Image (cartoon, one colour):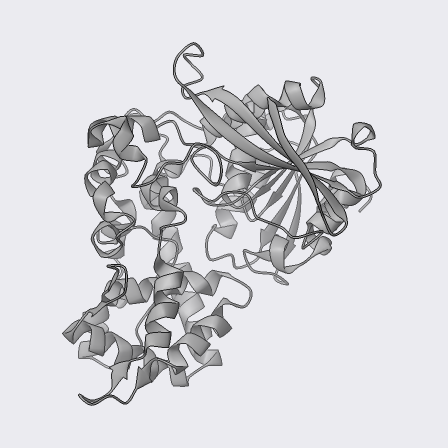
Length: 436
């Protein structure tokens, strides 16, 4: 462990840490990669007297959130904890994995083999490798948002001795379902979110159809090489899983067209807004390993599960919708082969993505027997109609983890930890402490 810098923001003292860990924990003497973590302590508190809280961000493929001062849930956490915001392997300031760095690994096959070490099992081994140097060997509390919750359930399965408590928000995974089963449950949820959006903003039915019809005739080429196709436009539905996402989508659609010499044209403002939302430049691992987080059958590849399952749901076929009078349905948290042709941040990695989709040998991530005997205090916020994580799967998993307490709420969407300020974390802490 190396302490790099300490500095201040309003109400906080921040310290940068760097750690060296094995790429493959099964071979600790082999290649090593670097992890970055940002320690946050409230101004005026003695960090040596505070227990640690490890934050695991959602994703996969996102670095830990960059807070300014005591934003969102951090306000509540800093009352009790010394917080480590960890950039999971391959993200943020940890050894990056993207179109610029992956060619250093060699061929697409070598790149895919490298990325096979970027799932929850490796992330938990990373956490356990760095914990003794930070805590002196003491266990810590883990807060996992979304995919960070998946990692937390893996932690409970493989190294519960490292935990004093586990807090999960929008991230109780299915313990056994295949990627195909995950997406078969996901498309009906996406459809419900679409219909709720159009009920709120009925004028968007025609707006979305008009934009899709325009793109069907002529996909838009964006600055930087991004291509906005009908399918890419539909993937803006990822917004619908956030608390204010429906409103954001509405405002984007209402400014789509401007008059131009050749007739109505998609506005620069709309195209730039769409590009910013759709680009994977800042989080390419999300696209590369997204389906692998559901792979647990050693004999079964994921084989572009979201794309195959989409074909079973005809209402998501934009061209069929445009040929009739059906509303255009947006998609959500799904990755497709065309992402690797329309996004310049992903295009050089298409063969690598195909190899990951064809890969077998994935190992189970969760241990139902160990979870059934769990002794770590666990609390989980389950969002009643979460678009990204199936609520029935979450509740089934909650029942499978001994002692886990749930807070099921429709007050928040998937981003409740961010949108709810200190309230969500405060509720979970009360549950694990038997104060609620």
